[in-house]
Length: 194
Image 1 (cartoon, one colour):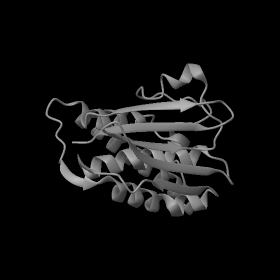
Image 2 (cartoon, helix red, strand yellow):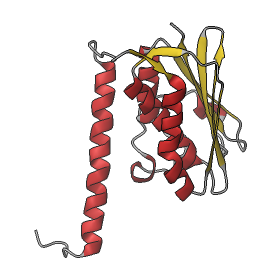
Image 3 (tube, rainbow, N blue to C red):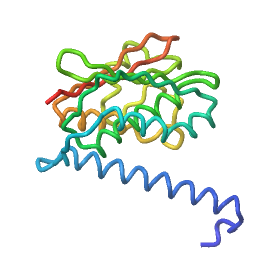
Image 4 (cartoon, rainbow, N blue to C red):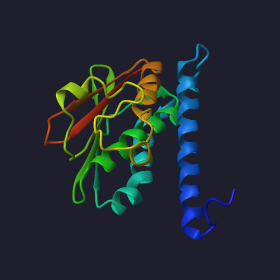
């Protein structure tokens, strides 16, 4: 319309906004899919330790660019689980990305998994500011953000944890968060051993 000059800065801005909208549309599509009555998982006996390792390695470059260290501690005794590898990778990817983004430069993200009472418990802990108690119960609600300074452009659409919860619950598991303000947060989910 002739309102803006098509220079590199304008094109970069338009490109960034287009990518953001594409991510938002994909998140909304995935949320709708997980809430539909015919939501189906592609279940297969899968080594969860391999899924966790690949997810951590997939985030290593991003975490490094943020100045955040990644540490992995998973036991050798983890059994094969009947899971949808792609969906559990999405859960891990979301938790890892959030943890890296909320940890300060020089901070750390610790990822662990262990067998406990017929369930595999996976933990992703960050070294960020933590979440206030009044916000902790709401972090899995759609569009909710505990940090009001984060905008849709800098912090996602507020759908990732909602989607993660739906996926974990579809696997017969639970997901929850623990946090102490000033000491970081831990997001934990468990999956049943079948």
